[in-house]
Length: 324
Image (cartoon, rainbow, N blue to C red; front, top):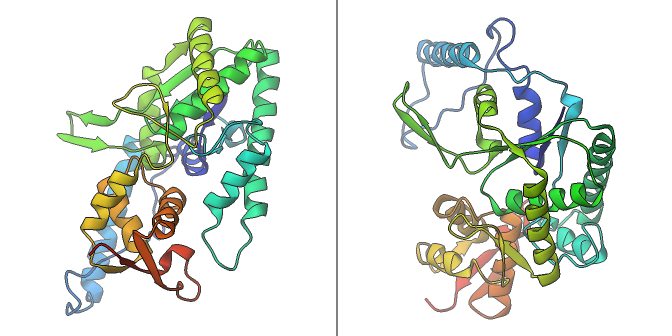
C-alpha cells in the first residue's frame, strides 16, 4: 500500500509513525526546551533539571506505550508538495506558471536561489505521481491522508483527476483529519491544522475512519479539480468547510489587516507572520503571507524602513504602517 500526503512535514511524520511505539520504551537522552517565566529567573538547579528530564522521559514512555503503530515501509510514503492552493494552474502542475509561483513562494532568503528548491519540489511531485500511476496499473491500494487545509483539499482533487485520467485500478481510501479530535478517556480536545501536527503515536487511531473512494466519488473530485483548473485563479480557499473555490489574490488581506492592528506602527515582518499564525493558523504560511506583505508595500499600506538583518529571511525587514 502506498501512503500519500500533500506536504513534506506530514510525510516525515507518517514515516516515523509507521513503527513508533514498537519495541521497548525510550531509555536514552531526550531534549527538553525550557522557557523562563521572566528574564530575571535563575537557571534550574541540577536537581530541578534532572526532575524535568525524568518527567519528560516518563511522558515519552507513556506516549510510546499508548501508540498505535501503522506498520509499513517508509519507502512507500509519498509526498505531493505542489502548494496546490496557490498560484495559476495553466500549463499543468510543472508548467512555467507553476514554477514561477513556487520560486516566489520559496524566495524568502536573500542569499539563496529558490529556483533549485522549486525544481526539487516539482521533481518530487513528478516522481511520486509516476509511482502512484504505476501502482494504479498494478491495482496496488492507495491510502490518502488529508486535512481541511486548502492545500490538501486541492491536492486531493488534483490527484483524483490524475487517477481518473489514467483509469487507475487502485483501491483508494481516504483518511480525513478531524478538525477537533475529542478524547473522552483523557478529557481533552486536540485541535489540528494538518497531519504535520499529529503525534507520531496517534496516526494509527484514525485508520478505522478511512473512507473508500468509489469510482463515482473519484469522478466528482476530478470534475471539481477541472473546474478550478479552468478558472485558473491566483488562489484557492476552503470556505465554511465547502469544496475549494477560486478566490482573488487578496482574499486573505482582511485577516492580514486585523493582525496588523495588533502590532505597533513600526515592526519586523516576522512579527506579522507570527501574529497571523497565532490568529489564523489554517490560512497562514510564511511564503504566502510574505507575498501579501510585498503587495501591501507596493500599494503604500506598508513602508519598508530597513533591509533584513544578516542571516535572516527577507521578511525580517523593518516595516512601518503608513496609516498609523
